[in-house]
Each structure stands twice: as C-alpha cells, then as structure tokens.
Image 1 (cartoon, rainbow, N blue to C red):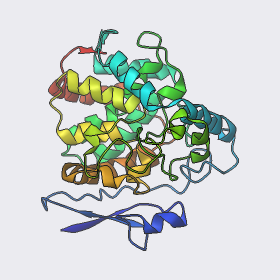
Image 2 (cartoon, rainbow, N blue to C red):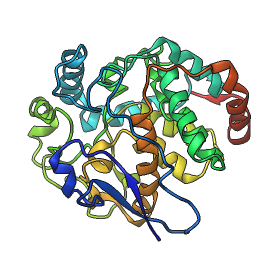
Image 3 (cartoon, rainbow, N blue to C red):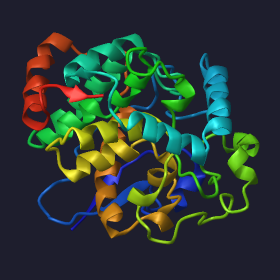
Image 4 (spheres, rainbow, N blue to C red):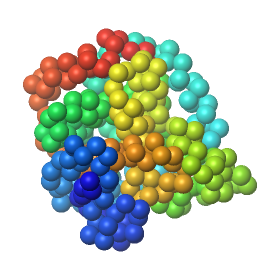
Length: 313
C-alpha cells in the first residue's frame, strides 16, 4: 500500500529528492497495511516569527545568531571530536535522574540553532508529543518518543556537561566523509580541519556503500547522546524510537535525500517513521503553551511503561 504524507516544499530542489513526487508530497511505502502514515496534521503557513519554517536566509531577529551558531558548529565538528565526545559521555556517569526530571531541566534552555522558535525546550517537547498523540492515539510509543526526542540537550546543563550550544544542538551530519552541500550553511565547512583530509573529503570517506547508519560516526550532539542514554538504560521502546531519536536532526538525509548510499535495508525501512515524526517535530512549534500539569500524568504512565524509574546520564 502506498500512502502520501504531505510535506511543504521549501525550495525547488526538494521537488527532485528521492521519495518526493512533483506535487511536493513524500511517498512512503507502507509495509504492514494497517497504519495510516499521514495522520492528518495541518501544517501551518508560518513559524512563530511569521516566516517560512527552516528559512535560514530570511531576515529575522534570530538570523545572525543562528548563522553564527552554524559557523562555529561546522568549523569544530570533526571526526576526532565526535569520537572523543561519544567516549566521554558514553560512560553515563554524570548523574541519575528520571525522564520527567530531565524534561524539567530543559525549562532553562532555548535552542540557539532554531530559526523557528525561541521558547524553552520543554514547550517544544510537549507540543510535538501532543500533536502526534491527537493523530495517532493508539501509538503510545510514538507519543513518548516525541516527548523525549530532544532530552539530549540536557548536555547544556552544568550538572551533566555544561557544554556549549554548538556541540549539542543543530542539524547533524556524517563525519569521516565529504560534507554534502545540502547541509545548512555548508560554506563554513571550508574551515573544518577534516575538509583538508584527503580521505574524509571524498564521497564515501572511511565507509562503504550500504554500510548502515549504525556504522557511521555522526556529528556529536543531543541526538547521539539521547540515543546512548536510551540504549544503555535498556528502554523497551521499539527500535523505530531509537532510530527517530538518533537521526531526527539529520536533515540532509531525511529532508534533502543526501547520504542514502550509506543506508542499509533496515535504515530504509526505519526512515518512513522519521518522515512521519519530522512533520510534527518541525511544524508543531508554536507560541501556544501546553498545560504541563494536565498532561503530566499521561506521560508519566508512558515513562513508567518503557523506562526504569531512574536512568544513568
């Protein structure tokens, strides 16, 4: 069965990417025939600033700071740096706390890389989760995945790492191979040391065609960190949830169709869930706040279902 997931086309180039037809609708092959992958979410025309979503060129109050963020990010995110951070934080020896306690810590932070919203992170988590919950009431694992997908940004908190924003938030991309032109503010990779490595600057780099994304080193940030937290704390969420959390910021792949030569068959099957999730992650951002105390009992029940009471971070 083939279903269509409407997705606004933000540039002419998107009309030709793999998996998008001429009308700008993303075509997804449904494997089990039982789930409507287009949940009916109505995509808003503009973001909270009255602009198109993910428009990095439009003049706005955040344009300069977002561009400066990506300049720093693209210069410093190297293969060696990412490997070092993964080893450092993979020990999960910073503290123990529950999922909801981590959500509350994110009240203190605003994502400097986001051109669409300047609200605390917990607002975005709840907006995404509630939007998905309305359209997919029976997929409770997807509701919880939405709630926790950005919890890796707790790396910004002094109690975990006190990291700088450029190595925690923003779009992610593979390291150890060439930087694809579709990555936002690609021009700043010119100053990245890996760009002068004769192996890293080639299309395939240190990898092989179809090697699988599990074997690819991604730029370090909240996606990879939260994936490690989920995996090492033995969540019972399905593998699709781990894939969504790990690659939801990999826009060059799921938005522009880049790097698909690195994917294996399992990645391609998982990708349909990322397409579904991304629509809610990106377009549910709003100035309208969710009543946290009202929805908290529901999400606590899901946390208890899929996670231990305390997690290592």
